Image 1 (cartoon, rainbow over the protein chains, first blue to last red):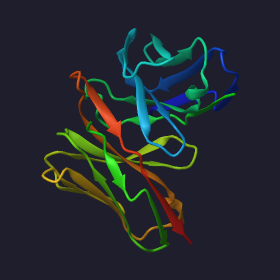
Image 2 (cartoon, rainbow over the protein chains, first blue to last red):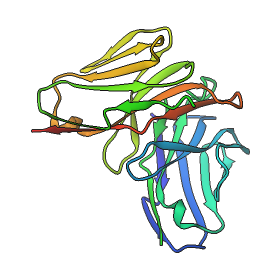
Image 3 (tube, rainbow over the protein chains, first blue to last red):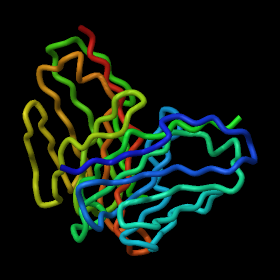
Image 4 (spheres, each protein chain N blue to C red):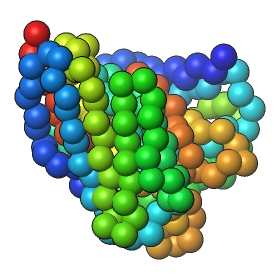
Length: 115
Length: 114
């Protein structure tokens, strides 16, 4: 069966510090991968998605970047965090070749607080 | 924007009652999905209904889709305390740039009191 991992679960970082959040998927090959951010009490905002190694699409201009160095690894990064980067970050995957708007499967999330 | 909007924003019911949540959207869709999120956790996919379907069932869940009204409803029958969570609708379709994407609404927070 497929599983998705995210770490760390919680993170407190000062403004101006770098960020690296990691997401890995097991049990599937060539998944579509997504990074979302959820502000407190709000819906999900799609940040990045990837349909393959090295292929990253950005949905909104921001202080963040994403990379996919391996088939089942998706990394969210920032060189200098802003207060507005605080939020709950969710990684998700969907089956390949079925469209990125088919059902998605989410990781447990990372709670990021920028102080 | 094709973003779904759930209604109500919050719903509090007693165990055993039915809970109905609604979702409205603005543009053409390929499908509409419902997800559940327990507090501080990731989302769990509940059910997907395609644009050519009108109703779908899964256990205690019943989803309807009215593409003429651009709306969907999620009915949870005989609710349990464990159903307490936020429920999100998500619409699948093409973004303005032509790529496929899933767009989430802001959710309905359901509280089921024992």
